[in-house]
Image 1 (spheres, rainbow, N blue to C red):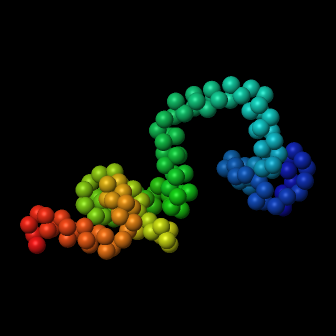
Image 2: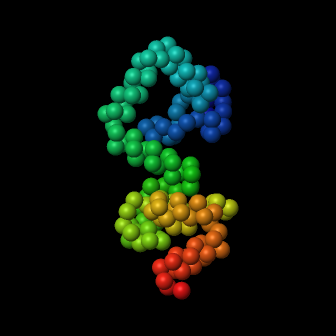
Image 3: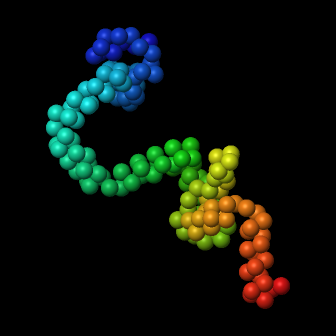
Length: 151
């Protein structure tokens, strides 16, 4: 339990946002009070706030890019950028299907949500368009062999 400095109520620790600069690593005001404060601050001068965010994004392009990537990986697949790079290194930074050294994306099972490996976007898109259907993939392989004179 912790007391909020704004509303003076004692609340569970989960009600406070993280703050790495505080001794207890939590903000002194609860999430609800901070939200009220932040909303008032924004609406007191919305143009200034929007410009402030735009300036930050313009001056910190790489930082924003990394942050967006981390957020997407965490939300979509439950992994960090470090875990992504670890998987990539295990695959020698190559697609698990075509073995090309290119930009890799996470391939996961849509049923279990488990991450399989990293693929290039072409292989990942092809797999998705074929509905991950082994029979269709097998038939397509036979079709290509037939028309290339392998059969």
